[in-house]
Amino acid sequence: MIMAGGSGTRLWPMSRADRPKQFIPFIAGRTLLQVAADRLDGLVGRDRVYVCTAEEHRGIVRDGLEGVGDEQILGEPCGRNTLPAVGFTAAVLCERDPDAVFAVFTADHLIQPVDVFGDCVRKGFEIAEQLENSLVTFGIKPTHAATGYGYVKVGEGMTGVDGAWGVERFVEKPDVVTAEGFLSDGGYLWNSGMFVWRAQTLLDCIGKYKPELYEGLMKIAAAWNDGDRVGTLERVYPTLEKISVDYGVMEPASADADVTVATVGMEVDWLDVGAWPAYGETVEVDGEGNRVVGRAAMVDSRENLVVCEDESEVVGLVGVEGLVVVRSGGRTLICSKAAAEQIKDLHERIGAEFGAEWL
Image (cartoon, rainbow, N blue to C red; front, top):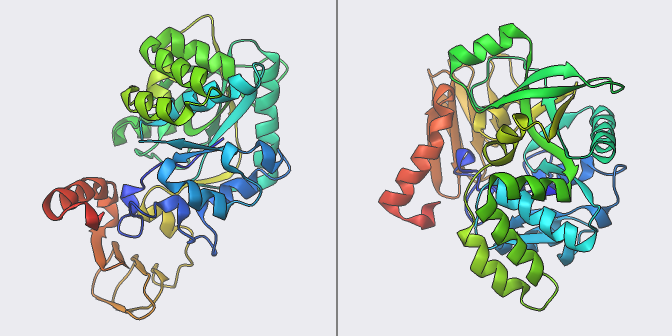
């Protein structure tokens, strides 16, 4: 299952409500969702690829992914964070196959090389299939003290499985001092947000740690094949607790003796395209460290990212350094790269002051 329901507010103004980042063809002419689906070719057939997204984007997904039909698109009536999304998927898959094992990926990752990714995913499936009550994550070796990612503290190596460890704990987005400590410690991996588990195991964990959420998911599952699928989903889904997989399941499971939480180390180049500086890493750099998409001219300017989506417009920079400048759909963003995480706050303010139509 590919999670494609995020709003991508940190990539505003190119990412907007009617076209979130996962549907923008800004990776060599392909969307992030298409890249994510193509990466699964050879692992599973397209008939076994599911996409969890906003119901309003069903048509975009169906038209953009060859071989993915309506029954494989799980439309959320509203966003409730990642645990309801994966729980929703688990509930539907369990209705179809009580023994289902599924992987969870997101539609905003760039991963190379793909063959190494595939080998790691196969290893994750093997662990989830062989070990009862297991939850498998994928950890990325940190390259810097990132504060925008969660971390996994690895424990003992798993017997008979190279490159896999037990998990001692999860840490959500630490401050810079803590992140630097994790980097020097060497025993922490970035939490990639990718998982493999039995659908029933995940539901059992939700029932144990979040019983009210579980109750809602069971109502949705019960109605899935009885003709009231849409009505039940629209009535129940908005009432589900808004919480992430990490907080709702992975953190309590890592302290639960009845659950095996494992992580598979993924030795890949991994980029979470969640904010403009990360997107900038996909763009060719010039001799002054500038990265440009579209028309832009610069004088005495360094280390800037400029994105000008409209071919009829041009952006000019003079005497500046370390900026993100984005021009898209009659909207303009100017911020320092260091403050890129605050674009989410800016997004909220623009909506409050000027109206949702600008979002």
